Image (cartoon, rainbow over all chains, first blue to last red; front, side, top):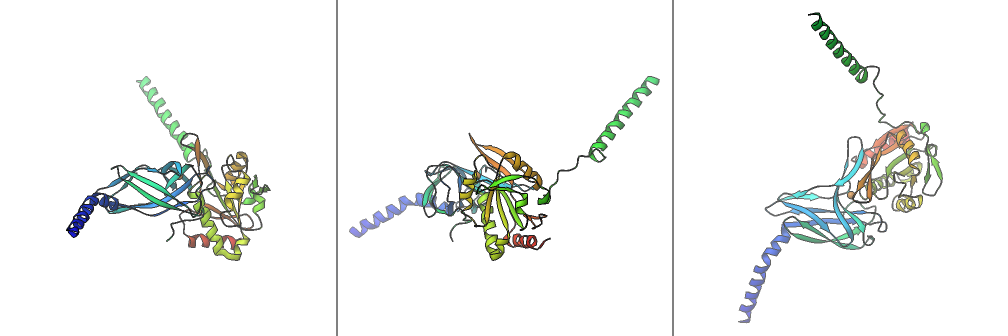
Length: 152
Length: 201
Ligand SMILES: [Cu+2]
């Protein structure tokens, strides 16, 4: 009797969890890291890879994190004359079975108006909010100012 | 009949004149010299800046050793630290040869980057890298010599960012311009150019 009850509970829990489970597995965040900041006056940047394993394209709407009052997605580019500039990246759309990588000298999450300094060795929570309402929160390790990629 | 002929003549002359003016400006002697895209020799540059230890520096300070010079600013969260990290790696690769170089970050944001701020910023990178900045007038003189550009661009409410030439400029020890390492070039290509700067003239 108890066994049957346990199975029933297990089945129910599994069943109930399926949608949430599938949703978090549809889009995954990997290779996340942020560059340490110099105090709180200067902005810094965070980088990560967003992979869409789902059937529908997803569009990144915005970023939320307690560490920065403003977290915007920017793109750094260098033109034919060798002049680099940085501007809001516009729509980040990830097609099914595709991923988008934010990395130095390109797409980055610009963390502005820092609420506390980002210290090497620390980590902080960052939430990606997609247009379909999906939220993904990830823990972002802070690497050295001179870091160039995530720890392997 | 004569009147029609006169109008025709005037029309033809006007067309001819405008073609001539066009030619004069575009291909003829009236052509403006194109702005140089290559830096002049350091010996031809006149500017005066401060380094991160408050020493007066000029183009002449770079003579006697090959130099790598990069423009940036400390509020730049992406391109600048990445380039400084590249330079740090190249200097590491050079080993003892790194001592033979002048490696300079020139801040194009003197309003926010005082020598003291620059000193802290460069301390996170290779110890050979030095920081320079100064008045906008002096920076403009330097940028003109380098055929480099920078432009302040608003970012949000009261913030700004600076678009700037992002290459690493290489000069030989006699001040002659050697090459620019573009931001997309790999370490191997960069080191080839750096060795060229060491060997020349
Ligand atoms: Cu940015």
